[in-house]
Image (tube, rainbow, N blue to C red; front, top):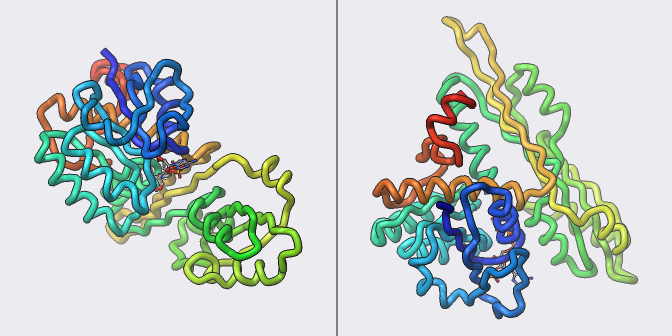
Length: 328
Ligand code: NDP
């Protein structure tokens, strides 16, 4: 029997979840919900209805897990607790500082409805968090390093687009190779923001715009660029379309730890991701956790869970017996 999935919100992640379902053995898409006019939202899967968000609760008995694909800034803090009372839900909430508050809100709603709400799964938070936890548990004496990129940062790209005279922009975050190498070699350097990542910006300017001013405004933008070595390239609209239309990302989680009576031995644990498509990968992680949410709820569990609370076997479409025979 396949797990009946609903998608709430149809942007990059919504489409990614749809692709992940197509490539899975045990999930089927049964409905998509949107805040826009459903007639204006074209999905990829044939013969699956698109409904208005207002109709969602009336479909609760037809859906095993509702996957929330809205944005972390304003959509998920409202939508995840709201729907966790009626559905098993999964989201990819990535505002790290607000995860405890989000957890509490989703936990209360999910417990009230007897459902499971899995929050903040994707790659960071998500797979990176899991790898940080495993490495810390195994090597308590040590230091963590997370490097992001090379990849597109949507938030930084948006920040450039808001500058006067900018038509379009794409920002890549790039780890500094020498810092990565130092960490991999077993050194445990204290790295400043500037020493860990650089930022590369590709900008399409409006005709006649003052390019020097735009470049200065980017490089001095507090919180976003001022603390980094930033390069700015002005390109044409055609070049933007040709060379920068996908959303690659990735990164490295490294723990450098010591063991031995006098901590004389060094161990490096490294987990890395090189993603052609950030939303498609994130959505694939989300679908694995949707399977877990469904199974946990079938077992009678309710409340909010993060990646830390869910045993790995719940993520796999294979049975425990198959996993022990082939992957252990
Ligand atoms: P999008 O901006 O593509 O989509 C967000 C929402 O905006 C959609 O659910 C949709 O809601 C609405 N929307 C999408 N396209 C349009 C449009 N053309 N016009 C009007 N509204 C539109 O965001 P992403 O899918 O790229 O990302 C969602 C969140 O995922 C991010 O905010 C980020 O926090 C999180 N994320 C987490 C990761 C992790 O590792 N944990 C990694 C990557 C992302 P509706 O259909 O209701 O209008």
